[in-house]
Each structure stands twice: as structure tokens, then as C-alpha cells.
Image (cartoon, rainbow, N blue to C red):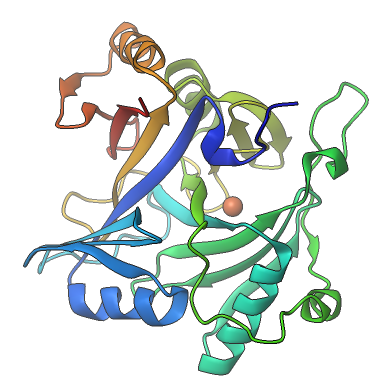
Length: 287
Ligand SMILES: [Fe+2]
């Protein structure tokens, strides 16, 4: 077993994402109030938010950005992974206290998860990972996931006496889940180009992870089968960052992009490509 089971310590992980919005202040304030995100960097047109000094989410102001159609490809949710189960219980209590409408609560066997939407309609998941030794495996050793109702009563018992309003500093973007038009094309890109291994087949969805993690990237066609990318200038997901453990991992990914016919440009942090759904992917090396 690896020294760490944390998704951000795997050979490839998703580190952050960027959303466009027509109301930067409203959205930024909402993430602060609801998730406890702190402003890490700020200009008139961009706010970088995160926890404990780690950037997790960039918000970009685009005054003309309009909501994309539900059937468009793009973001299904940004999923923030918490260090402990008690943190999820504390967040549940906090959400109830401030009256945030939750959109779901599920037990996925490998995780327990709570779902909500931000005011622009961007999906958010907040979850914790059960220890890997407890993940159920199929006969072939494959990871099993399901969508069962979350045992809220049991979770509430785990609530610390003094619930924290903000998510803890160790919170990370554990996975990003995309709406895609076609699962085979999604697998070709997420696995064949970005380098995440297919971990779980699910009805209408695929889950891809690195280092044995259940998924760093999810893709589904539940509302977006054969859908078109969001029209240019739409609100919502504009970019996500995929981090490779070292320069070698990064250059292999750039090579796979080029071989698959995707344009790659040098960027400040590493390389920038565009995924099959028109979303920018920043490819970076951790060291
Ligand atoms: Fe998810």
C-alpha cells in the first residue's frame, strides 16, 4: 500500500478548477459563507479561493456569461474531499444551520457524500473517503461503487461537539465529474490521453483514477448523451488542472495529447490543452 491513500498524493490528480460567472462577488461570497473558502488571490476579474492556503477554485468574471443548456457537456460537479468523516458531519450541520438546500446525500460504498449546487447551478459534492481496506471489491479485484441512501442518523452521531463552519484546511478537490456526450470518447481521452485508469463501470458513467483511487475524474451521459459543448462564453466550467507527480509524467501526457491530435500550448505552469468538450485542461508537474 502507498504511504498515503490521499487522492492528491497519487501519481496523477486533479488539483483545481475554474468557473466563469456573471456575478463574481455573489459567487465568491457564497463559497466563503457555505464552504468556508478563503480568498487566496484577487483581481477585478478573478478570485482564487481555497483552504489553508491551497487554491481549489478560480472564479472568473464574464459579465455576459449565461447558463448553458442542461444537455450541454461540461461540469457535473466539483467534488471536495474532506480529511475525516467528522468533517462531513460538521458540514452537514453547518449546511442545515445556514439553510443551504442540499440536492442529495449518498453512500457510494467507497465514500459518503453530500451534494448541493452553487447559485449559478454548478454542482458541488462534499465527501470523505472510507479507508481503502474497506472498499468493496468485485471478483476481478475491481472497485465496487453504488448509490445508496446516506445514513444521516449515523453521520450526525459523528458530529464533533463544536462543528466548524468552514471546511478544514486539508480539504482538496478529490475529483471532478464531467457531463460528456459519449462514454467511449470520454474513456479515450481521460484514460488514453490524461492517463487515469478506468476503475469503475457504472450505468451511463465511467470512473477513472490514478494510483488505485476510485476516481479522480468521473464522466456521465445521464443528461448530456450526444450533447453539444456549452456555447462559447457560457457560465460554468472553463478549465481544470491535472497534476502529474513529476516532469516525466507531464511530458508523457503532453506527448499523448499530441499523438491523439490535441493541440498543446506552453503555459505559465506547464502546458494547456483543450479537452474533447471544449474545456481547457492545464497540465502541470508537482515537482
Ligand atoms: Fe462525484
